[in-house]
Length: 498
Ligand code: NAD
Picture (tube, rainbow, N blue to C red):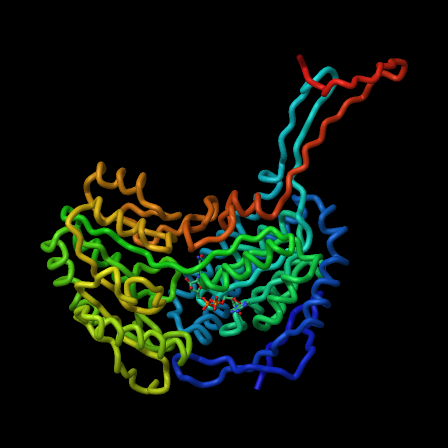
């Protein structure tokens, strides 16, 4: 069986005999083994990065961007292979895998604009004979730690931008689906990236801790669950690093009485059940304004959830795949049991679903709860599965207050035809990404992605303009060339232009 190891300075390297199994969630069978990196692996990746850094940061942005142009072409040429690798280890459908790859490619396209966004600012005559400019310099060697649910897209949120800004990058992908991430990183070598600029170290907490402790690593980007985000933020900053750590979510959609209901139902189906609910922007709570809205919505949603086509990515017409692992399947099932025990009405029960020919897969059908209240664990916690909770409120204001009281604030949206209601919602709601009749308001690559409250630790959002700020540091230079013969007396008052 193949063992996935680590990519350092353009070579696959191996440091230990400790491996873990990687599964195909649709069959429950092992697809490959993955070697767990250790301190030695991290040290080798850092050494390679530090060796490559001096030349890479002096490489003109235009030349760095050219690597990204070639990388984009290679990603497009290999998209079917990549999508298959994603689906095989993650379980999502092929169209969904192609969708995440495309959103990743859009971040590579944004990175191609480096000569423009690294241009800097210049002012002449900021004082007598003085001019000034500010430059965006690389931070140095930076690291990224990524989750299982977007093995292609989330790493592509990070390293194209970090690299094009002149940094070297060490990626620690999820141990649950490492193959597509590694395949993509190898394409970067093929695109002509100098060796050592980008490395991939596979592993778990030990690798992350070694990166946190390494003084050479100047910044860390993290995407994953909130407890780990908080840990990496606190430990990373205590070790003197810049950290942006994106965490978990519980995204609410408000459905107003005037919403175009068929459209809202289609939007909710995709946003709640796409990728088996394993998206940080998945809608997991539908907040219905008025009982009549709730009843009408449920009447339309119920048959559609019952008819969801659940199966393996290899089967035709499948809309939703399995959960990532057996443990996660048990966790999601446990939440559904808890919801029932706490008194919510389980209108569609996806437990006990069997997919013919895939009896060992981690499949669960879509679940719909009504009359969910804010004290229930299915409301409070991130389930990260295909479970949609309906909460009933009496007004838009009550719905907004509910969202604002939740500990997470990643994405949210409203379905309405009323501009005034939408405007109030956009102004008042406490979440980082807001949709108006857009169920998954994931910003395009030229904007930045990030939540509020316990969905993000740090100051800057991921990718886009905030990504550039995160991966660069400003240097302001003031310059003067006095005439050779002139001699000025020392000034002891603080220099000013009074
Ligand atoms: P996770 O937190 O378990 O793992 C994320 C990464 O952290 C992995 O690389 C993992 O190996 C590493 N890790 C896990 N435990 C660690 C520990 N104790 N110390 C150091 N590193 C550790 O998350 P996951 O299950 O892979 O992904 C799902 C989670 O990610 C969900 O909570 C989801 O909402 C979140 N997510 C958030 C965003 C966002 O943009 N906010 C995007 C995607 C996923």
